Length: 355
Image (cartoon, rainbow, N blue to C red; front, side, top):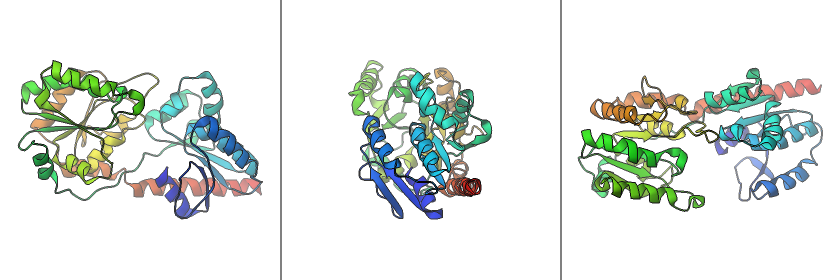
């Protein structure tokens, strides 16, 4: 939401109820609450009781989880409210959640969905299609990195084909299944291939997924074909060098009911560096990978087809310039244009209705 806040602050006056430590130039943080739902909501509601009619023209909820607060604030101020929807916050399987949080989102004057998948899930749950607009997250288009050879030398990978996986190491990302079911098939055609995995497992995972990946590597004799580098900051030079050094990005997200991939941001970040992606066609990933110009989409769970697509693109790589042009559609500039238009339209409607 940091970029969204920047856009809002550039076109209107913004007050924020946010977590401790929140700070943003040009924004007044009227209340900071610990971001744990049972502590955040009571404090936020007390703050919103001070809102009076006409204080605001538009209230924005950063996710469906915040929609009831936005609805209450909009009622207090006699204005409109807008909700960002990200995927998991729409499909969360709880009768209470669906009846309270999603109901508030359905009644929003505008919902900004991060993908066509999220929009579809909203419509399936009763949201009016006329109130939903797709707004894909944006990406910064980095300058071309000249660190690719240095990255390869640092990790002893010079001259070898490289596959790159980036993301949180959680079951949904499918890295374990990729190592077990896809990588051995790729190694048959490209014995020198190395799969470089960048990411960290959340503390809640207790290292179980990483441990399972390491065990699979040993069991399958892939020690020379897998390199786990751990976490890197998304804006770090080392990550940019990894994107530049890799031959292909793999995004083997699993299709798990109730735990969807709302968009597929990492595929766009890879494309911004000119790196094509092979991914399973699940959730919002289908919006992030264009089979015509930025990679390949494979039916969910199709390990054989995934390996074939990887081998195909290793043998006949897509033009990095062509892949980068795909990412340009998701620039922060375009994101800002769409969000600014929606916000100004809703503010104008609210003022008209209040007269």
